[in-house]
Amino acid sequence: MKTLDEHNTERQRELHRAELPNPHPLPNGIACPTCSEELRDSNPSMTLTSDPPQKNIHCDNCGYRGYRLA
Image 1 (tube, one colour):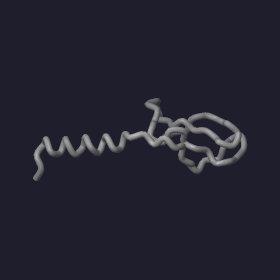
Image 2 (tube, rainbow, N blue to C red):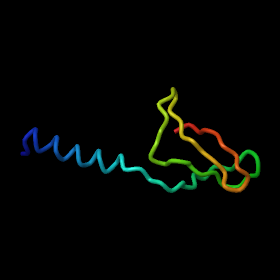
Image 3 (cartoon, rainbow, N blue to C red):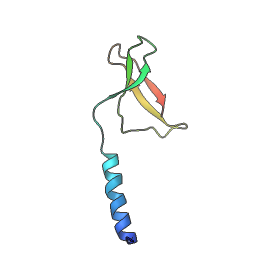
């Protein structure tokens, strides 16, 4: 069994890795409401703390910008 300190150290490393930003927008499988091309999550590692949580999205084809539910 691991100690509490060992557990906390491991979790801190895991959380740090999970928080590293992904600088590349990722396709999300949602059609753009303006031109029907695939939308992208603008910053995949960031979720807005709204209620409900949302993500920034954009379209590379026509420049549409908006939000989707996370």
